[in-house]
Image 1 (cartoon, rainbow, N blue to C red):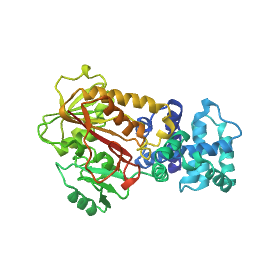
Image 2 (cartoon, helix red, strand yellow; image 1 turned 180 degrees about the vertical axis):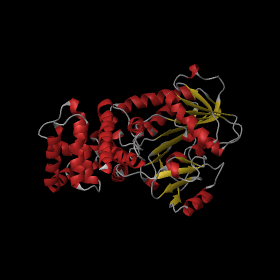
Image 3 (cartoon, rainbow, N blue to C red; image 1 turned 120 degrees about the horizontal axis):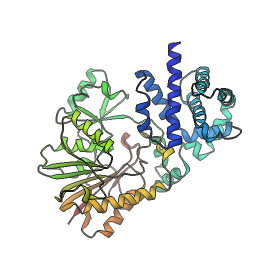
Image 4 (cartoon, rainbow, N blue to C red; image 1 turned 120 degrees about the vertical axis):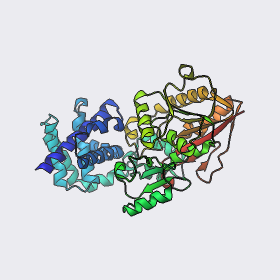
Length: 438
């Protein structure tokens, strides 16, 4: 009985979390951690699996609900619609017995204060089970359902990457690996891999990184050896390839703009601890706390400033920077596998707004760079409009800027910069371009 109650509670919490994503446009990373604090570690993992799974397959699950419902539910019943999505996800993607997934999802309606919906959920999910083969065959012929991507995004990926789009779609729909960066000030990769092997944890090195590893089976990072002592950080290999492109050396003055949550800030300090100054800037005060937490755990120090990178006069002291890292706000189309709520929250008309913001950031930060200084522009996007096209336009309007070609053996060379596509070498999608001021 106790296990049933915990599972039921988990389903209700998952429905409540997803309803906030669907109805309020809140990100999963903002909602989920607070919602599961009172649950056991096992139920926290179950809620996470449900939420990430429903969002990962949302376009497909939504298509199925449209086939199964005689008429759409009212806007005020988004929570019931969410329960239907949760029920379908359990029946299709999870190894939960059908009778348990069905009965406990139905019971969750009562816990949400809507007992009238029990009959509807029961009938709808049973209809799916009776017609599963027919419905699954039908969705294969529907591009949005088959690829589990919204139409605008599917079209963009096909347009920009006509030879690689199936790989990108498949990678977006897969679970991402757990990637780590070894804090080289405390450990080296070879020793840490031996430590993992001693603890019966299988892992392998990430190519073209000095400190990156991928665990073959994801786990809670807090249980890994040395995490609390600052020996490791969670960071995808594509992110780990950014900071070495800054050509670091002692005595430099560096700005990490849009720095939260601090992964690249800490990587800079791990690669070059003898800097003159490192400023970690972010506009979001709450996200600055993440930078502080990460630096403290890693036993590192940077100057943390709250400020708007598009408006330097509100925070800048007038001293130019030798290096600027701009990991720009973007569509996130290279990290959908890690943030599947992008499929729900991102809209096609968001892209033009993001491009405008990126332009403003580049223009404002360029004025802070010393002559012969370097600005590294990165995004976790696979859309050229945010990447090479953005940088080409910047170069055309800033005569004192020139590309410093990236001499690396990885990525797809673009007209300017290099692009990694999602799934290549097990990595996230990422773009890099290095600009020199003269």
